[in-house]
Amino acid sequence: MPLPADPAGLATTALVSDRAPAQWSPGMTDAQAQRLFQDMGAHQQALKLQIEELQRTQAALRQSHARYLDLYQRAPVGYCTVNAQGLIIEFNQMAATLLQVAGDDLLQHAFVLNLVADQRAGFADCCQRLRQTGQTQTCSVQMLRRDANAFWASLSVNQAADLAGAATLRVAFEDISSSIRERCQGEAARAAMHLELHQSHQRLRDMAAQNEQRLEQERKSIAREVHDELGQVLTALRLNLSAVKLRFATQDEALLAQVTGMKALVDRALDGVRHVAGHLRPAELALGLPAALAGLCDVVARRAGMACQFSLHGAMPALEEARAIVIYRIVQESLTNISRHARARHASVTLSCHDHRLALTVCDDGCGFDPQLPAGQRSFGLLGMCERAAVLGSTLHIRSAPGHGCQIELLIPVSSTPTNPTGAHHD
Image (cartoon, rainbow, N blue to C red):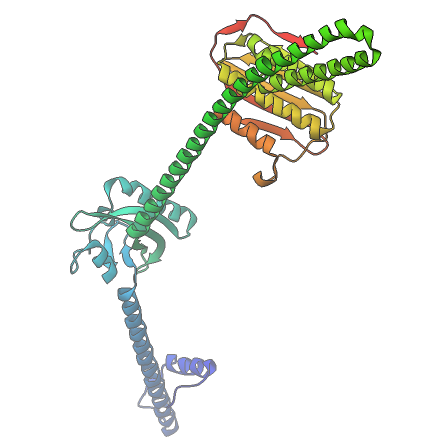
């Protein structure tokens, strides 16, 4: 009889096979005996069908199991099935290959013995998380080969059950030593690159500091030449014009007018000489940084037509001339930017010293700007100020927003030796 094609037929067959035929007795009539014979035939046929179905199911199971074993054994990762006692009850060929074990040496072998001793706690934590969440857990540990050489492995642990239904763990692992080595090599290469980049930046900053020092020396030399040579020549010329005026101007009014005009030109030239010399090398720096910054604020206030206030708080520490000049240039560039671009009505420069650090703050109430602009869109003045701050071993902090003015802060480590006892205030 062919196998029923639908579940209902199978159910009917199952019901027939479950119903046992009636027992024969001597008092049966011919009709009852005939009925018993038919029932026995139907029952025998149903049993035959069930046996055939069972045989087909067993064959399918054998094929499925064979495919599973083939896939299990040929899997590109190692598999170990671990029972409740932590013993390996099943493993595949890749597991034996990775651990360099032959035959059935892994069977009934504690799985944790294949882990480096200090890695076993990590595996235990992974199993604990699996029991708590019921979800597959992963971790990276070092495993041991039979020759005691360690390798890095990525483990994946999930829950399973054996044929008897007992709870087991299915541990999948693969060798990731090459990936770890590549990652370590990549990290080492990046670290070396960052170090080289840092050293390159440091060399550039050192060169910039040296160039700035040379530039200041050149400015100092030029300022001295302009002040001493050109200033002296112009002063002598003015004296000669005064002598000419005293001797000949009373005899000729036209000559008097010309001499007076020439003296005015010489006076303008002398003012220009003083301005250039002061810009190249502020004379006030000889009196100390606070005096120089106060004089700078006065000059900016007169020329820009805005209020510019200087304040000094705390005892001014001793500063090397080179560091004082760098701070002066930062303030000078800040005030130049304010007068040119900020459209501010008020600016302030504050210098204070606390805990062996000199704090410089420059504020204005101008139009402000976006300090997050890319470096290529910032003014060279800001970039120069940042580089000068780096020369001082500090970082320039800029706080600004469009329409909300600007505040520039600089913290500079200094010695604790003061040069004047108290603070000062200058408008």
